Amino acid sequence: MQPGNFEYHIANSIEEAESFCKEKADASFLAGGHSLIPAMKLRLAEPGALVDIAGLDDLKGINKDGDTLNIGALTTHAEVENSDMVKNVCPVLADAAGMIGDPQVRNRGTIGGNIAHADPASDYPGILIALKATIVTTKRSIGIDEFFTGLFETALNDGELIKEIQVPLLDGNSGAAYAKFFNPASRYAVVGVGVVITMDNGACSSCSIGVTGASSHAFRASTAEEALTGSGLGDDSITAVSEKIADGQEMLSDLSASADYRAHLCGVIAKRAIANTISCLLYTSDAADERSSVDLGGRRII
Image (cartoon, rainbow, N blue to C red; front, side, top):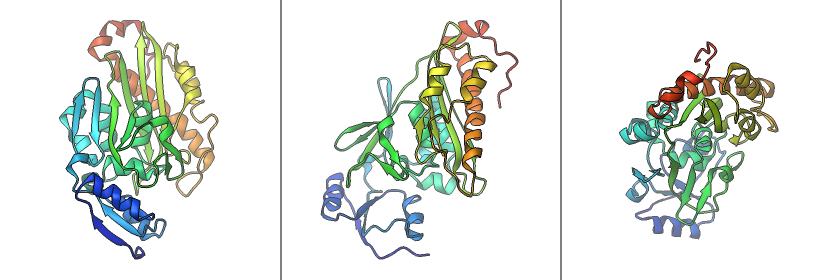
């Protein structure tokens, strides 16, 4: 199919982009286009006008400010994946970016456009929730837990433009991983789980778990987080926690997977992400003195 008729406007500044969207109630921002254009072709989205912001350099780039990694909204997935800075200070985010789609998608799609589109099967939401990121618009800051509100719905107001994503950096006693079960054709996450664990004296002192693909929007697995906190990170603990990942959430059911299968996958993928997080954590320099105090119980990283 082909999209409906629409006006096309190239913005030369953030102010011009916001001004145009304010004048046109049915206008949408166009960044990389790999989310919006397919939706328009299927007539799932029919904006009356597109405001092309791809050329706005103020919304691009990656930098570190103290203990925070700042990623411009127009930074492409490939740039996140290949950035030496991201690899050094937040490697799990580079890993997640590398799992998105194919090279064509990663070279054109942007992190800001991805999360603004809020596809329930996107990869970034799961790991950004685990990392406790903040979404900064030109008007305000929105905590990641409040950002995704429903199926293709976010806390953004009409015409509100994402400026950057702020990611708090982990300390030396924390590890993170993202794992997913993907659709072999689209590589969208049927279920994806992001995990951050902080270890103290051989036990989990705190953790954060974000889940994408399973429900109408990405969510924090709060019950599972509570169950894992304080545990010795043994096989029994991880198995018990994995059974709580989908608690209180209504699972999606579609051609990729039934609701019951998605609930099962939540546990399977969570176990992989937790195991990979522990593997990462045990080999960081600050946690080296704790390696001998943690019993992996013959755990196999999967």
